[in-house]
Amino acid sequence: MIDVKHVSVTLSDKKILQDISFQIPQGRILMVLGENGSGKTTLIKSMLQQLPYTGDILYQHQHISHMQEKERAKIFSYVPQIKELAMDMRVEDCIVAGCSRHLSIFEVPSNAQYEQVNALMEKFHLTHIKGKRLDEISGGELQMVYVARAFLQNACVMIMDEPCTYLDFKRQHMFLQETRRLCKEGKTIVLTIHDPNLALQYGDEIILLHKGKLKAHLKKETNDMEKECLRYYNELYGNHFTMSNMIEKGFLIWKE
Ligand SMILES: Nc1ncnc2c1ncn2[C@@H]1O[C@H](COP(=O)(O)OP(=O)(O)OP(=O)(O)O)[C@@H](O)[C@H]1O
Image (tube, rainbow, N blue to C red; front, top):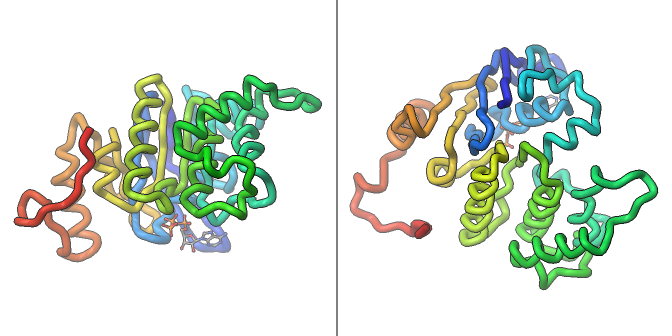
């Protein structure tokens, strides 16, 4: 379980997050929603100890801030926003770096690990970019390369910052189906996303940030997530939304 307790972040004298508290049980997908600048990235970077914060963030009742870097790498894998991704390496080398925590400093990845890379590249339909450098592939492909790398890392908690942004419609669903499968194996997934429909379809829980504050925490079991999400969106962003079953328009949905 991850326990975020009264977390606040101030950067350059600006309050970015204010008194955020929530828990995520193991084996759940938490979707983090909120408009641009609401604090989603700041929240996940705080969880990853990449930003200074006040309050407490615990994993299985242990303070994450007290853990060694290596211990944290066993617990968390991270897919940053695409704007932060390094370019100067080959696709396979980028993915195989996901298992670097299993290697000692002088060790190079084994053939078996490269086989795992090949399997992941097949799973995510990336075989056509094998051998290419990261600056020779598309934005969506780059995003999937980093997702594959995080999958290879096999950490207990996967934290991903807008992993769907550059993915086409099919790949968004394919990827989210994979994350759901990982959850069934006991992994915990935290991901920021802008599409409330994807969050509703795949999330076990949703938190909604607004101006650095936690506006809502919805759970599949205890909330009518669709209706409450609609209510919050209308409250926050003006009365612009309705549910698809309330209007006579067709739209594409993913058949499971
Ligand atoms: N180092 C910094 N110093 C000052 N302000 C910052 C810093 N980093 C981020 N901010 C501000 O904090 C706010 C929250 O940023 P954050 O990146 O967490 O938002 P977000 O919800 O992830 O946005 P988006 O959906 O656009 O990615 C923004 O107003 C941003 O300008």
